[in-house]
Image 1 (cartoon, helix red, strand yellow):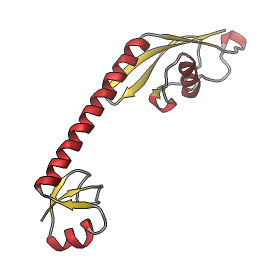
Image 2: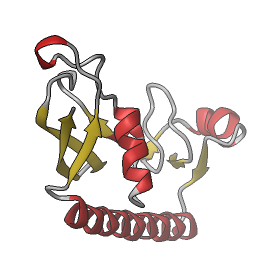
Image 3: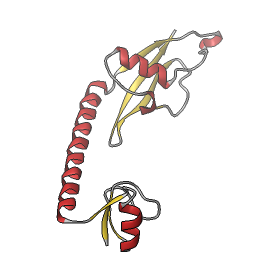
Image 4: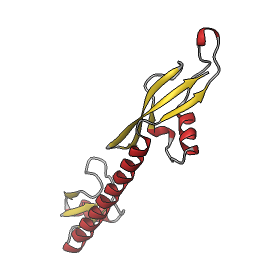
Length: 146
């Protein structure tokens, strides 16, 4: 019997996948517990419409991310930091601080989207990657000043 999975099922498949299983397993476990629906023309059409809708939403998110990327590209964020002897910076600038600074500028970017490879702890400009979407990344400059 062929079924469309509504949820990920361990060792069977992922959501929206069409799999072939025995009738008993399909009826007594997958369908009964809401993990799948039987494959029919109607269920296949519904699945196709949902996949098309998700694809359109994904394209819209990518488009929005590209617009944000254009406005953020090569933007420089200035941070005034305390320094000690020989211009050593006390502490580092974190992704949370960068996120808060971007929020003040009107960009809603989560701190998890900001990828810092090495701690930002020296005066001058450091390049930081921001992952706006899986497919859209941009570089912003972080400038530490006295």
